[in-house]
Image (cartoon, rainbow, N blue to C red; front, side):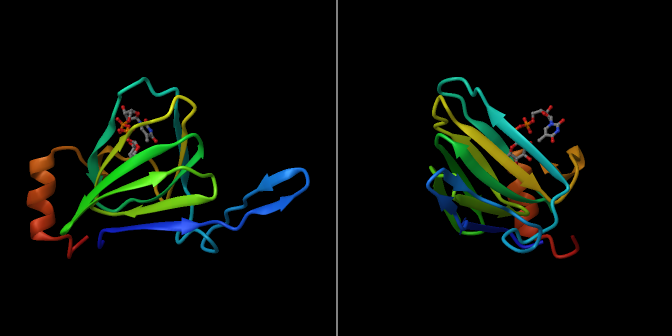
Length: 139
Ligand code: T46
């Protein structure tokens, strides 16, 4: 699949009690959710990621705190800051990603369209460059 990285803004359903955000398959998420995981309690100065996916589509949300997501694909090298529960970052396909600058209170929720599958990971940068130059036309 083609690499894609994009912010999405969620509708906040708020009232005097506070805020609520609802995410539904294919309405505000462009895919059906098969898995969810979250990353929290990240130690100081730790970066995670350093891999790409072949096909997986994901939606990342910092439901608490802040985290920066560095993304690299095609000619793009860009850092996307997640700093609000009402903002999500869609990352699809062969995008090299590094999660960094986690705040102490950071909770990063990730919704994914596939089960955990180590075969979908590209964990070596040289392999990523090589594969993306070839393209994923048959994926
Ligand atoms: C991604 C970024 C944003 C599982 O057993 N099941 C799971 O669903 C996941 C996500 C991971 N694992 C195992 C695999 C490793 O042994 O948990 C361990 C840590 O995973 P990893 O080092 O890949 O974690 P991150 O934070 O570098 O990357 C994760 C996701 O793996 C990845 O898909 O896009 O978050």
